[in-house]
Length: 79
Image (cartoon, rainbow, N blue to C red; front, top):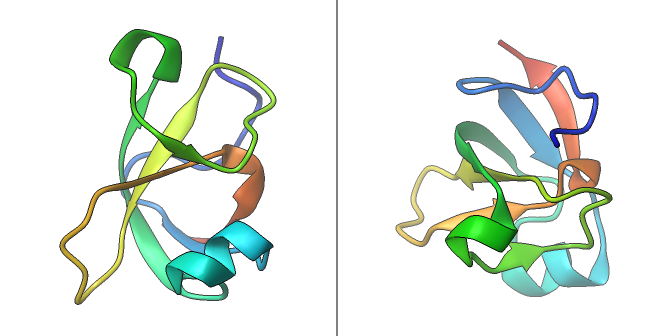
C-alpha cells in the first residue's frame, strides 16, 4: 500500500541529508521522480527504511545509476 504522499511521477524532489544519502553523494541534491515500485515484488534495493512497501526512483542529471528511495527521504520541490 502506498503511503500518503504528495510526491508523484515527474515531480522534482530534494533528498534529505542522512548517512546513506551522503554516502551516495545525493544529500541535498534535486532530482526528478521517474517511477514508483513495490520493493517486495520487484526486489529493488531501497535507500532508507520505507515505512511501507513503496519506493520512488529519482533521476539526477549527470548520473546514470538507478536509485530507489524511501519516500520519507524526499522533500517536494515542484511539479
